Image (cartoon, rainbow, N blue to C red; front, side, top):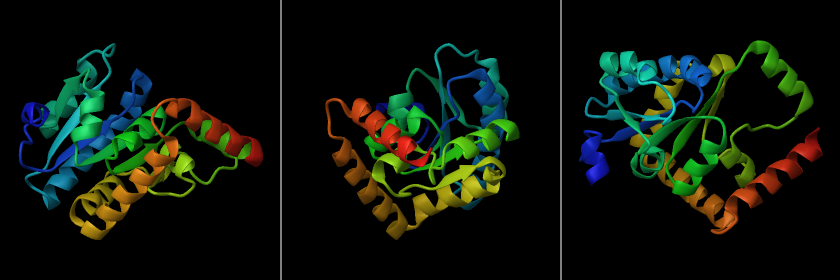
Length: 203
């Protein structure tokens, strides 16, 4: 209740945005995330957005997006955002697995330089990029990569996760099964082992 009050979303849908922990990721991902919040608000006017800010990043990186969209930026509360949001938009990385363990429905987004992406696709033949999907062995949450990362696509998926009861419930159930697969102690080590086994099989 305290966290939801800080985010201005005590009794309304809360969307958490986790653009990453590096400045380069912020510049690449936050503009499209912020614009998606505008579109989400058109469909769900009462929805509120919150950005997870890494502690070592300057506030100026986030200010123009919070000022323009009304999204609240909160520092050092990433796990609260994961646990207490109704839906998340998460840049692909370890955060997707952590968010998966929290059990919150999410949209995974990933965008890098075309050359880096092309090289990665040639080296590793994985269908999914999100760790939570890799661990689950199926695409249990939507992924958007490269040119597919648009405000419209993000907003559409988030709105579905909020308003489509059947989709939301099936996602929650799938995340619960993935969390059970990882267990409690040593979850990160087991996730790494699963990911490495998949990489070895597909390289």
